[in-house]
Length: 239
Image (cartoon, rainbow, N blue to C red; front, side):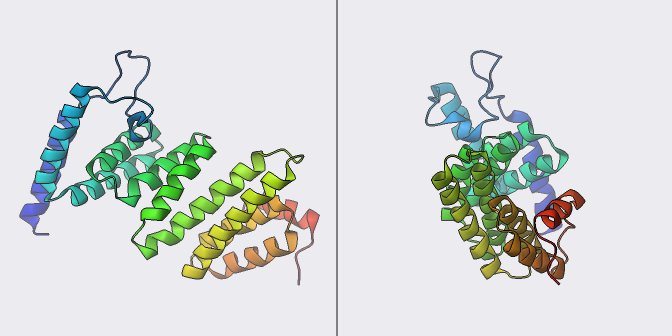
């Protein structure tokens, strides 16, 4: 992209952000722009917001050349807000990214990540599964699968021990996604790291140590010392 076009895109993005309506409900006590897909289909979209959506999509598409390009631009903005810890603003940008291109895997991934941080794991899994169905970037799919495996593992951890069959099913789904992720890219250390921590929760300590080793080989982020101590108490590190 030339310098002229880049400046134009940045200016277009800024103008559109200022022009966007707040997307609040009739009651100021509840917003619908910081929940996935504005709460659709459960929350009916009023006509005035449908019109605002159409205007936004038209302007953004013209500014960035296509709905697809605009969707990616809004997703990039959302990621920046996630990095700052501002989940509400991130969700608003993910929603705009989704509005621009409902077939883009990125906003669904974003929905899932935010829902995970909000503790709504079952809803997070739904969005991450949707993203997995749509993802067309094998490089990004590796990290997406890791997030999905982590979500299934977190959901399994919430299941009481008395419901062993449900826990086993969810942990099995976690293992499937971690396995697929590491098969796609064996050098992505975060997959091994998160898989190790999931296997600890499953009580599979020998395999957890194996994944710890693989994560260390790939220079993954160091494990929390408390995790390593807990794993050592269950099973000393194999030589």
